Image 1: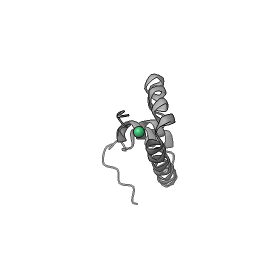
Image 2 (image 1 turned 135 degrees about the horizontal axis):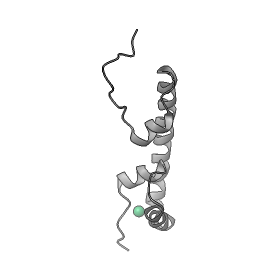
Image 3 (image 1 turned 60 degrees about the vertical axis):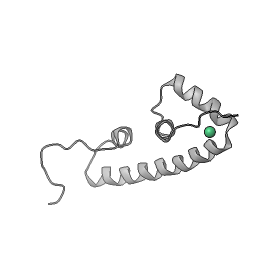
Image 4 (image 1 turned 30 degrees about the vertical axis):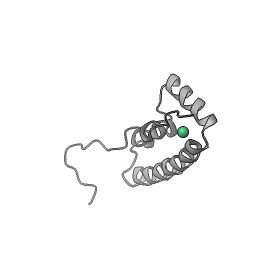
Length: 86
Ligand SMILES: [Zn+2]
């Protein structure tokens, strides 16, 4: 069996729920038969969870930046030069 393994990118998108249904389905099919990718997904899941927690903390610090927004597009929009420090 030489199926292609799931790419790191797809795995990450899947973990945050950002894949389209069709792609997610295919990915799940592969996951069912591939313990290696299952393990990778678990690792990715933990990573995503940690990132969410960090994002929440940052969100709280900066008053109300939506966590969803952060996890979906991972980088903050650099809006016009207002520093967080005061
Ligand atoms: Zn695999």
